[in-house]
Length: 459
Image 1 (cartoon, rainbow, N blue to C red):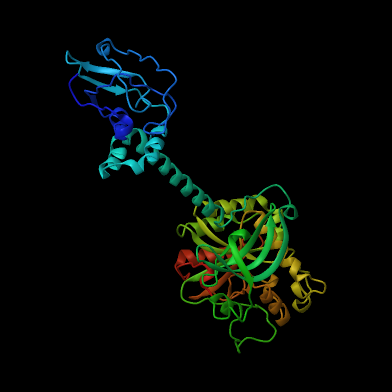
Image 2: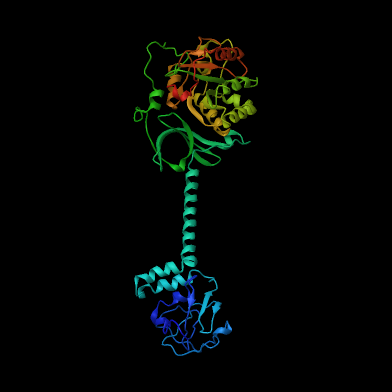
């Protein structure tokens, strides 16, 4: 039988690649007489015992019927135990055959890796990958790619789980959703190198969260406590940040000691800062005002100082505002305007609002923040006193809770018209339509300072 001969497969240690070489075509393979197959044993190990009996060779094609066995030095397993498909033959017994696909693509690499020490040329290792690429290397590469995809997905999952938390509003009351609410002041860092100041700690639907503040932009966010490493800090240690400088501004000698219209009343730069107070009211929300505001451009900024009593009574209006924010019509900053907004008619300011005896300031602050969070929004760092009335002790107490007191220098229904940098005040809760008419008139006449700016830019 003419052609290339392999007299001792075990001794050669590399002839298997001619039989198991993926799509490599096999030509002129002479099988010596008495070749024995020992199923289940690896190919090429010299210490293998000879088989008890020589299995009969299967004749898969009449054209190879004249192959006769002869003795070999070592018992070996046939290079391919799968059926051979005869592709072409001639009178010289030259055949071209391909093995059927292996069921175990990893069995062959294991046998080859076990013989790496016996390779006689560096090309043998190259042949291992070139010849078996479609059956061995490619599946391995596919598995590696999927492993990388899985790792990336896991990493993305971790990133997503540590992204700012968006609370979906639910039917449960505030107390059942937002628990263990407490003021803190901690410096926090995460694995991405970001740092924040945490001012509240809580559990929302049994998930530990923190309310954080970017010390430069003043932007707040709800974060998973497990994603941040926090340690206690102080106002003195953070005194150089923009947040603390806004919280403790320099004393203005022109301001009277009795702090009516307490806090920040005028912003830096031009334009105007539109703010609306949503005090408790039985009247519906003035939605036309917000439609006119949204007509000024996409994501028109507005700060809403909302009271807990208003949210509790106006769930549909609150949801409508949130939808305006979701679709990009408005960019709303949610400030705190107390929970009950205490007020008694005809009572002088010095004994009214928060100055009334028995007002629990912390409860007024924290209950409103809890309700804002339970309804799916994030409280800002701004607080507006009911009636804009406070004294030095109240102002200091609010600052100790790390809230920036906010007044106004243009209460449209009562005060002077706005000028560049003015913090304007209107009441779109149905209680003050006169201020809204003035706002509309100023906008249509072109006398309104523009552009409208986010309240975070005011300090």
